[in-house]
Length: 391
Image (cartoon, rainbow, N blue to C red; front, side, top):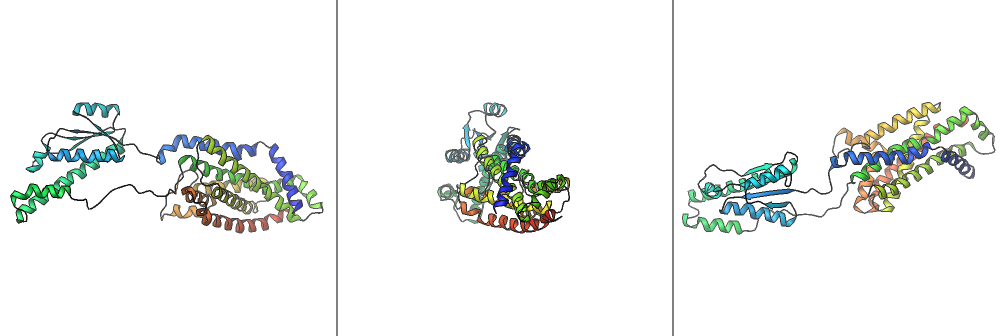
């Protein structure tokens, strides 16, 4: 093992003088992640959604008061931010200025019209730049109108069948309004298994560029064979497998250092939240080993450094697209959802999502699969690469 470590130290010293490894391993993924998060961060959902809704109730009857009470309850629970206006013109002006996203308007005489089944409507005025708020306000208005229709139907049915005498209709409606609801809506605290946008892009791009770092071991041997320095190593009193292990160890060390620096730097600069340190360490280590194994296997089919670089680049880009490096791949039964788990990228992102809840041990399944990938591809790759030192 001593000769392999010596070779790895020598290669590491050479790579440290080559500034390209810093660009590929640190600067490029961090810079691109910052740009991706800046441009696309809002497209994948924000942590909180603020719903600014206004209301104008010109109706003085029970129906208007009922809607206003329901909206006040939503405001007090934090579901939405309610603003009450005294006139429709004022509300429309605030919608136009963007102070509120939408306004619900209950016209005068609404309750009286409902009582006699006359045509009437609850209006929703929305800002074109706040489609989500407008849709939610419209949904509230539709549900309120549906409740009014259900009440009217119940009263009509009760009167027509004689189930409730005409004199008891008002009392019956009051009892129904004060009864406990059959269905309750509330908040339930759940564990998050989703990375925020900053963490997602840094993680995805870091493992993407890791593929280019992981291929350095194989390309280094092919370069040394072409330049003739590999034959000097082979003439030394060391086993040839030590040469292969030393080159591979170089890729592993550079990959680990690169990933660790990215985790720390992204947390400081971009506010990335990776999860518990133990779980992150497990995922980073297993991902580096898996990627080095894959790149060793791919590079083992090449005869020149250029061939190795081209093959490895094709695999890196393909795995990056399948694994959700650039665009999140939704969970489901589709082909893309299944193919991402053929890649180390997909399992790395899955493992980080699992530990987002704070449980480091949740990374064990993904880590196990990544280590299995590393063992299979690395074993086959080392067997292929050894032909370089036997040629």
